Length: 319
Image 1 (cartoon, rainbow, N blue to C red):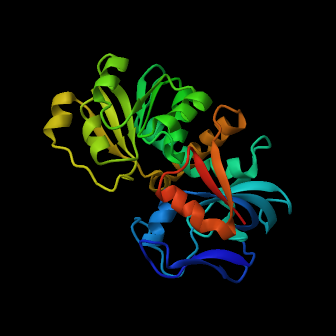
Image 2 (cartoon, rainbow, N blue to C red):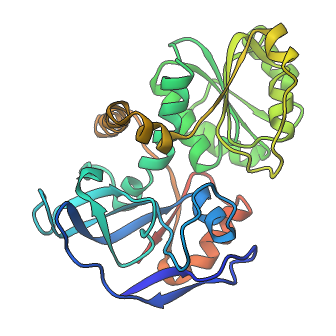
């Protein structure tokens, strides 16, 4: 079968290519899935460079979440439409997924949409609900709001009843977010602190930051007393620092968000988190935006689009 294989780590994807690999065999506790769509996430790109906390041995196939049809496996009939979470292996024609990580695909979602729910919305849920303790009516400033993880946070925060400010470098992309997800306000970055303070009447209660760097620095200047600054990543390339007098004087907390690790450390809560986001998806209260679908053979174009932030929402590979 065809799969995307990383055989050497490199900054320019030169160590990654489509290759013929053996099909995975059926096994107890596993479900074989014929992949119809696999969502691209920023960690997939980082793993090709060796810059993500998970550093699998070479060679490996990236791909963290898929949607497709069951070939064989525990608890699912052949041909059943399912979604599944995998730390690796999703960018292939067939993938073996732990049976516990497979669930039926909501009928109203396309395969591409269903493949785009798990990682992005799980990250948003752990950040906003578990760590941020979001309450209806609170102001949530969502950075990187035009990317997959940020847009999921906009969508989820709205579903939770928060008042949402969507932030991005691109006013053009923010216009798409405003049209499709109706945040209460939008701001462009950098130079957003005064606008946020004016909109909120003093500062945001929750700040969701997958960008880091200067965005993090400026966020500490427009957070409310008692606010929660949620560190999701640092796509800007700079890991920010904060002097401890800032959270002391302004009374805010800084929380690191690792949604997958949260579920591994707290398995019961991890299952509750997944159940919650898929329940919201089944009820139609959240819905990912798929910016583009790429044939697996065009994987490089998808990875480069993610690298250059040329999307609003999610990018999906289709074997």
